[in-house]
Length: 195
Image 1 (cartoon, rainbow, N blue to C red):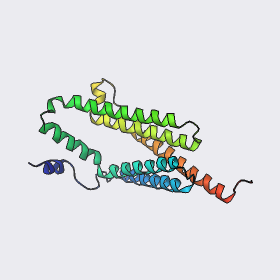
Image 2: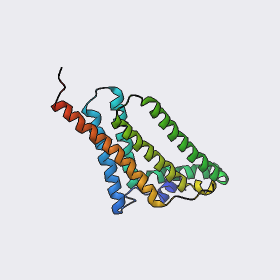
Image 3: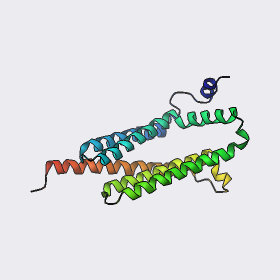
Image 4: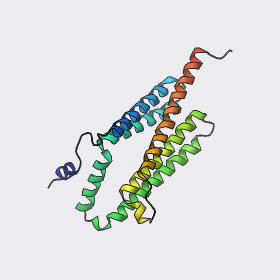
């Protein structure tokens, strides 16, 4: 069996979460990504402002696509095929644990970098940082549950609704931050300060 056939047998291109909740979540991700793009173009010609909001927009857009296309399943399937092909399958739990630990470490590192560079940043961006923190926690928790890390660490698996609340709060924080920034910049354009 070829690599492509094995991968395609486990992952299908299509809408893999056709529930109303799945569609609403995917649409909200994409709408919030569009808000981030709008705010990136809105004001503050600084490069850091544009990079921050464009990066958020791209990340949210990818998460929206992933919600329906299950791109993480494709990645997992490719990794599983590689692990089996090279004879690493007897150690697959260790590899999964390392993957989850690496994802958590990368998320924590990203948050530390954001925190260190956030000095003097507006309250609006802090709200976006909170959203990023919540979405990073959601991603790590999803990966940990998917790869049975909770069982390996002898921890109780969080309730499924908790994942949805964390995800929803993260998306909401980022959306409110971008929307507030757009509204504030339009107010400043209409009512410029006196000089």
